[in-house]
Length: 139
Image (tube, rainbow, N blue to C red; front, top):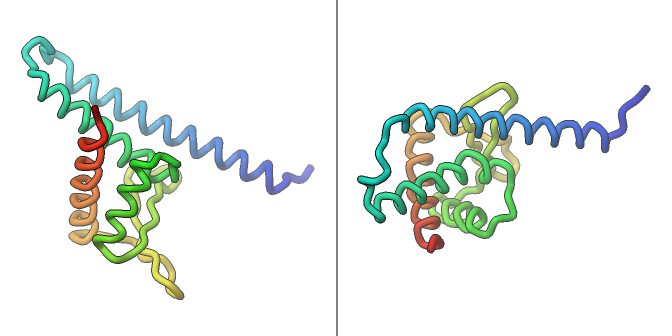
């Protein structure tokens, strides 16, 4: 029995969705354990909003940027970060990995992975841009 290209693509797409869901569930479990005894009655309205903005930003950073979402906020974030750095980027979670990999895409050269200090700087800037975009668009 041979598998068609469609079957292989469909299987890989399903696997990718399952891997993304598993990462999301693991992150939620960690957040629930960390938030264990927090008293919501003492949190101000602004602090609740800031926490929600940060959660949405984390979701965008960990899932939507990688999966190529059609979300206009994600598209704006990617566009702005590419304008600021003057390069195109590819975001990926390799199979069996928990950490996001970021590759710089240049013409006629294989993609180069960001590492070390350069990766840290990029992620900080990406977080700041995403946080600002989410804060602007959230009611």
